[in-house]
Image 1 (cartoon, helix red, strand yellow):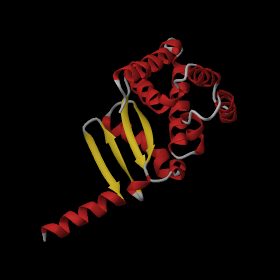
Image 2 (cartoon, one colour):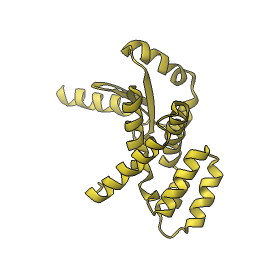
Image 3 (tube, one colour):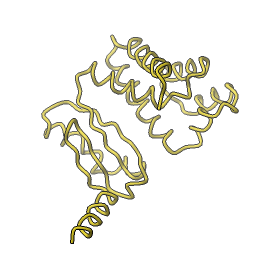
Image 4 (tube, one colour):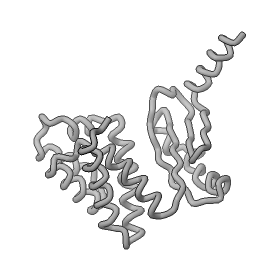
Length: 181
């Protein structure tokens, strides 16, 4: 859990990034997409250790950023975070930016949690956005999360709507059913 000072740093970094590209909607969206992909990559990657571990030098962190081949705007932003020693908050900054972006663009946030990042490229997942936009009659942005504790399937949260189609959810449901009978 972040302390108040750390929360202010996170909010300030996310807001600065949003404000820098607020007038250019295409760049704002590209930054959103790049940061969302980066969050997924950092969820289960040695790269996260490079950004979080103070034993790695700034030059190691800069090299890791170069390898990612991110758009120039995100590349510069990450390098500033390294220089200011705020890269350790990258996951929180990405989450804060996503929320600010969605508020700015008046999109609905849908959190889709999958067991494996390989599922992101599956056909059903790719067609999900259009189906959800029809269902909710709103433009949406899907924020993907990876959680191997759900074992398989997915969970979906959109506003107060929650759907659990995960193996973990099914196991829990069966356990509750077994306890009742």
